[in-house]
Image 1 (cartoon, rainbow, N blue to C red):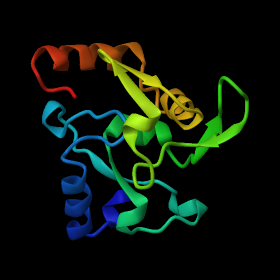
Image 2: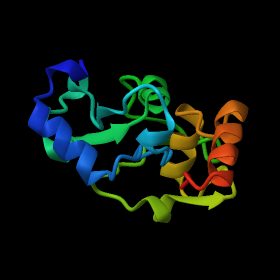
Image 3: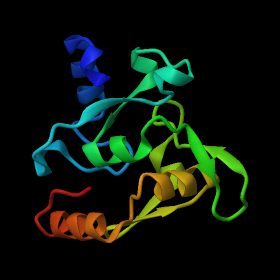
Length: 136
C-alpha cells in the first residue's frame, strides 16, 4: 500500500509532478482527497518502491488502474502497457480537447480506457475546472 512509502519519497513524487495527477492532470488543489504515489509497475508484478517507479495519481486514476500494467487496445486488440509518466511524455500520448483527453497512441488508448479518464463525471469536473482556471 502507498502508506509504506517514506515521507521524503512521497514529497519528491508530489513536487516532481507539480501537484497534478500524472495521468489525468487533475490538480491536488481541486480535490478533497490527497493525490497519492502510484506504483507504475505494481509491487505484485515486481515493481519497486523507488522514485523511477512512482507517479503522482489522483484517487480515481489510482483506484481504476489498480494492480494492472496494461490492457487490450480497443482499436487493435493488442496487449499494450499503460502510459508510463517516468519514461514517456504526456503530450506524445494524449491531447486535450477542452475537458476531454484524446488518446494518440495505443498506450494512450488503454490508459484512457482502464483509468476511465473520459467518464462523463470526470469530463464535467474538468470542464468546470477549466472555467475557473484550475485545469490543466
